[in-house]
Length: 299
Picture 1 (cartoon, rainbow, N blue to C red):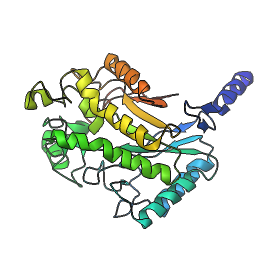
Picture 2 (picture 1 turned 120 degrees about the horizontal axis):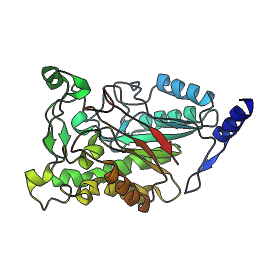
Picture 3 (picture 1 turned 180 degrees about the vertical axis):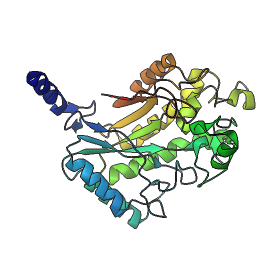
Picture 4 (picture 1 turned 90 degrees about the vertical axis):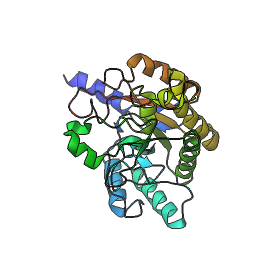
């Protein structure tokens, strides 16, 4: 038993070199958990910095932040940090402090960049957007009348709005790099905006705008936005700054994004220079709440 424990301890303690040269100090990774610790202006706070300093003190090699929104109008909940467009000196200073606190005891820190899409919290905005106009079906297994109070019916994004999203993610990634974070993670799981574009149930653009819409219909169309986001980020931050993607292995919903499709999307993303994937599953309508969900970190 002691020999087995010693072997596993050595495995966990082994460093990992991701493809573009960043060295992760060990194999322990804290996955993203929503903290809700920003201030009223969606900026990092001393409380948020203290939390990450403590996680670093615990010896975890890599810390992935809770979802940081690239558009403050569409947040997962109040208290999300937002990096939305140009940042003033105060915001940049706070972001630098967050990065430094996370690295205080040798950890690497990745910022998870996201857009809540049709899962935008109603306390923020009851007029969310999505790939189409399909509302959430019993999120968190709520009764329908309650769901309508927390999540509005989404409006389908125009093609112009969709095409503007890669720049938002690239702008935020550039800010993260400049503030000293070690990398970024694109959140394309759990039913948030990029994930919902992959989901053929939520993405009804072909029905709304016709078969010629470039971001709906086939898997290639549904994956186009995610690939454009990663490509735009890579062009902006260069080849040495790590980019991760959190991707659903499946939506755990009949007719949703499948494991076979996830494998194909991952292969496309690999060609775009993604360093590593975090594989998850499910969304508000199933899997995360009330269904089987499985998470694993793959390097």
